[in-house]
Length: 502
Image (cartoon, rainbow, N blue to C red; front, side, top):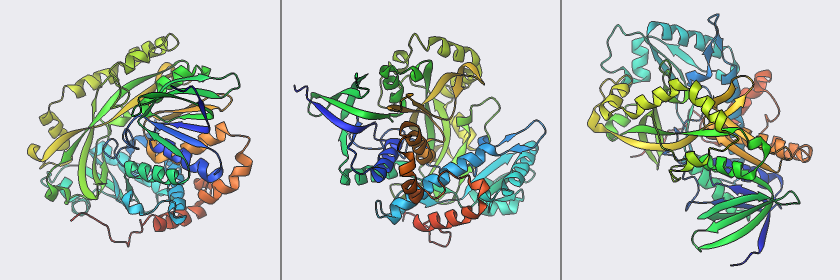
């Protein structure tokens, strides 16, 4: 066994969409930096980024009702929807740059045009959706959104959902045709294939066993080569922990103070997938409903057309499951090993505060297939049990931390970046909107961790992402330009024929 240290400028841990995005950005900004990637599994994009482990929605707040809340005065707050949409526009611009530069090809292999719809039932919910529609269509980011509570119009939009519904049911929907279905697994694999052509060392079946700080401020790693059955020793000036739920353990091991008082709670997802292709072909949209009272934001039910392995699919969910693992391929001891002296009071506080979530999870775990079918029938009244299978989706670790607003043990439902004060290490934690915001989130990592380079890198960043550093809501003249250019580059123009499987 050799103790020789292999030096890199940057080490990325985990071959998911976040590491793929950060590595690609850095290679464009500083081509001569040595970048090394370690992935425990045999190939890229096998955990949360995998196409079967997430909803595949290009999250732009076009249909997700949890991004728009009703204020006490009855008006609708769309500020979060605006932020999420602007973030997704940055991702779309970067992907367009990669396609236009021939760094990746065949965008239809990872992104497809697909209407995004919100659907609600009940008189009060219909009123809410109408107010939401009026608030959003006043903003140019949501241009093209339509609203209808007319059954005949809805039959044209969502025939499968409207079949056999009572004529007097209060139901309404919004539709916007600029939505997308994104195969983040395929995109992740494309980006890593590209990185390997740029002399990036992507080491599969390599598990990071330990991480520690060197006296000179660099980071040292002991890495297990699972194929070669040997231990390797690596050092880097900058480290990104993009290992999904596995990032929390490595962050704790790093010992940085910013990683203290942070815990995680794992939640797995289940989807129902339709086996009858005739049914699949009757639906063409991502339709998001409204979460039940008391349910967490990630439980919003949705019926999704998906394009996976060049085949049109239909999925419904999510339903919550539980496993103590932090990754699908993780250990049953992950949750226990994440409890440390510095975060135990934070975790206990969350347990007391989140009794409603605990109750919700228990109820979800006890659901039979037929009970899940009953929830599906709120979307598809004619759904038949024998035509649907249950698939286990990805494992998400919800961040628990102390915050000023929420107090001790606050459960965070978004994407969190934790970085050291000196910018030498950063970790990505959390979940939705996740992959859709990979580009703006990784740009934020770059800004935080390489402040001394930002000024010299900014022209290149703006070449890749023209709206970088700007608020689109304050520059409406840019919105149409960006929508047109990204749709053209990514093959999303509405007049293009949609490709479906035979």
